[in-house]
Amino acid sequence: MSEPVCQFTIKHRFKFNEAYQTSMPFTHFGEKWSMLLHNNANERPSISLKCAKESTSNLWSIEAKVLLKIIAVSPLNPVNFEQVATGVFHASNSTIRFGTGLPTRGELAEKFVCDELMRLELHVTLLKMVGIRQKRKHDFDRVDDRLSDVILVAGRKEFHVSRAILSYHSPVFRALLLGDFKEAKAAKVNVIPTTAESFQTFLSLIHSSEAHLTIMNVVEVLELANYYNVEMVLKQCETYLSQEKLVPMTRKLVLAEQFNLADLQHSCLKSIDTPADCVEICRDAEEFGEKTLRALLKKSISFIGSVGNNVGNNVGNNADESPSMRIFMEMQEFQRGENTRRNLAPLDFPLFAHYPFLPPHEEYNRLGRN
Image (cartoon, rainbow, N blue to C red; front, side, top):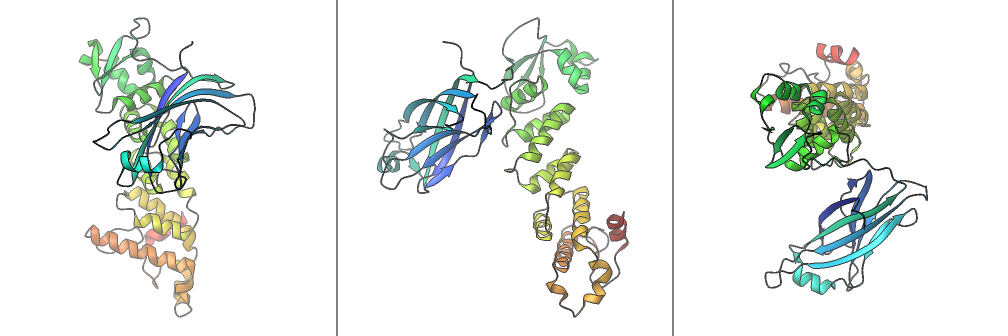
């Protein structure tokens, strides 16, 4: 039998008493995979692996073998429950399901539930793929003098790589591995602190081989790409963050400023549709730098409209009922908190430093009208 196409594992802790749940999606071979749990009252649960391939074509299929593990928590019976299922994903079938032979809810509660949580694992082996173009998976463990001439060490794991390939993509690697540093003559070189898994993903993205960013590794990969100045990986991280809905907006804005990801900041600001969205983001903005706050100010001005110029005319005319006025007052309240936190006088920190019922501050004019 031929070698498996791919192997990966999905792990998740499910709530024992919640009827229908799904894990967060994981991407492998360009497809999103997730684990589903359906709890039936007084019956055995149903557990499934789902492949969420977005295609109307019937020319693709994925044959898979899946090992389910329900992790034991009882010290009196520390044996995991295991069951294997096989199946084929295609246009008319998106799941491989476990049901028959699973423990009852009573058995699960006795042996596998702790603090109302149950830990499940799916160990997936993809046996055959049809109609899906696969990226080659680069093997950095293999010793091949024709393809590698240096070993990089990350998290106690060794990666056999080519100085020339890394130097082509990274000016930092070029200086380190081909320049006047001692590493240029060393057989092994330690990289900056990171996990072996994140460094594997980083190298795979450089080599355009099978690799996927996740919410668990994207920050470490981004740090590696920034440190070694690998533009192609920086762009892939930026694109992933722009599209990933599970990453909070505030986190995206912090990363955008930290790593100068202009397109990411733009996509975040573009997705702010209402004054309430802007206020809510600012309330969670203790980690924001000045550039991000300035960008949010400009965005808020687009909602405020003519409030700054006409605020005097609104006094006594139910001004507080205006959405523009509410966002205007909320932003000032946020600024007062910022000034207090930073021990600044009201106008020492120009962001949101326009006071109601007074002519707009010059910073308002400069940022809002340019």
